[in-house]
Image 1 (tube, rainbow, N blue to C red):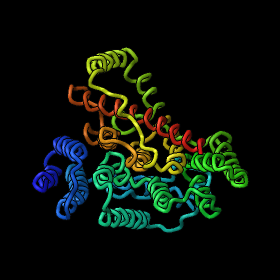
Image 2: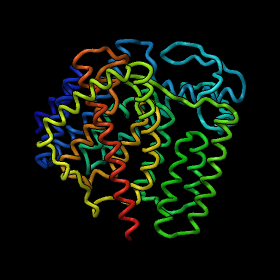
Image 3: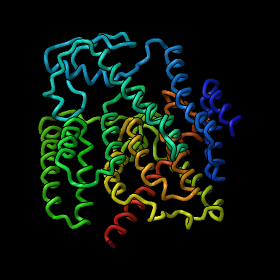
Length: 409
């Protein structure tokens, strides 16, 4: 075990695809055989994210010194700086001077927040450093679900979040606090913070839906009314901002860097063509037919006594909204959080599939910036899509399972 973990830490620096394959084999063997890690093995496993990001950052700038790093946070702070006065920002590493953008597709509150500090890069660097220190501190103290957490930290979604430093990191940290402290009850301060986030990142609106469902099933009428007021207030502002002010609503499309149902439909409609998708579907159906006796769907089950029902209900609407839209890959981290919630209640086969889903959620780093059509890339992207749609359907099943259990009580 120690030797294998040491090899994984070395492979990180040699070849990403070989490392990914070796790490997935390690996950399969570890989960399938119920391996437990001693102190030294845990340290070696925790070292993988350190090595991974050291190599990723060094390799990125070694290949291209003008790479876009922490771009999204610079862009966000630049936009807020422009609310105070016109400001030209020299984007670090890209070495490009860019004037105030017309829109960055954020919520209404970003039109009024004024950031008056000129050194945007310094603030960006501080935010990035604090975020990474929080993650490293959490990793150093981690004792349970080590395989899953390490897999999440080196997943394409988390990698993309670190490199872009998108403001989704604030939502990510907020939800982590909710889950850690089991905040599934009504709290005005929490809802005030959620409102602030929603007026910046509009998709968090549906967290109110999760709370509404919990209060409805708990028969807490007073909290249903209060939560509905918060929900309608935020909804009206979002409608006004995006539909009446004609603000930009981001809708990214990429073969390797984005995901979602609307995204995949647009990709098929505008770039791939439904004929090629039909051929691929036939191949998948043939493979499923040949393997039908090997696949036992009765093994797809949830242990209700181990499922965090309220957390599942709270988190699902957010993930569902993200999964049916079109998003940059860093938003997959919210699916990672949902996987974390349900992980303990799944059996071995599901645990392996859920970890693999994290590792292959988007193919930005396994395929690259653009998509070159060859057999290896087709296999990688097909595996990614199959795992995503398996997870999408499975997440709906888990949510309905949680709802039915809540209703019975």
